[in-house]
Length: 410
Image (cartoon, rainbow, N blue to C red; front, side, top):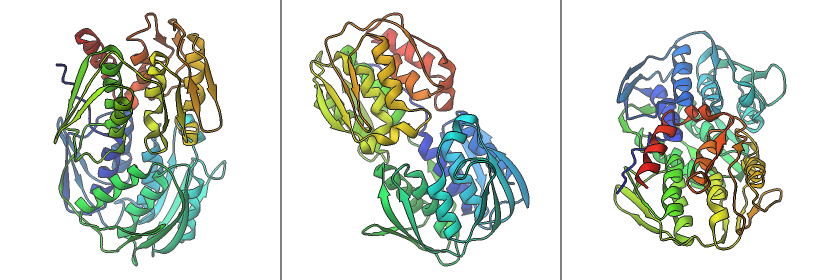
């Protein structure tokens, strides 16, 4: 039975780095994800004057509740959305002038709802080129707190950034949310804040965060559920079996819900206390599924959809159009290039069975999730290659080696 060792969660590692930097004391992060995104986040903290010590299996962060240790910094956020959205928010709680820039890909991704909310809280934040996009400069002088309204319909990361800022404000924070996508990611945030000593309460559409700061702790990082989806999908597609240890009933990540989609399609799924196993049964049924809350796994499902016995329709995933690339169109275009019939709408994609997909070069748009998803398709379609296979370093530098090992065992 192949047991796959999945690297730590990207979303949990990024939040843990923010919380550790904000906490009073030294925090140890156990088995953090080491990838381009998280290394970029840690490097950003270092540029802001936080001490980050690294050993192979853990990172130690010296927290500074008062904010960055330097009065001026220039931070490059690479491709990381969490880095690019969380670090300016963290810096706002300090005192100094902090400039943030990012890659071309990240410069295209939106930031405006968070910018507006921070300005409403009195933060002096200026965009250099396009309003609502990097590069930007924060002239920080602490944040008083109070009430603010936020539209998180494009990204739950805007809300996560504000919630994590809350305990660093003088009065605490009440965030009124008008729209919200990817709710499970916000639940990750509030569970992690609890582990660092802060209780967030929810009153209808309002999230209330008390002042008073965070306590340092030792925090284990669970394996990445979005990354696990490719290995679970591989089992369902090939009739094999895959177990991921460290992800079970108590998992924080909503993307583990992807295995419920595989179960509906006919796979055997077993979720234990600290592990999840998926077994393929030789059947993949078509289905219609709403993936609003687990939209990062939409490409994984699209990649195995041509092998179902009926149409696979994925709905309510408009936000996948503003990720590293327009993932909805990228999936459609690559599937069509293989000869698969696909229809799309503003927030849905429908993939039809019946084609005999042919190998092709996948256009990745520099998006790690497109590569990892279509690697699964490659288990059934020979001759698939990628125009940029290396972009997986964003979340899983060793993906191709690990997936080749799995292919050999399946």
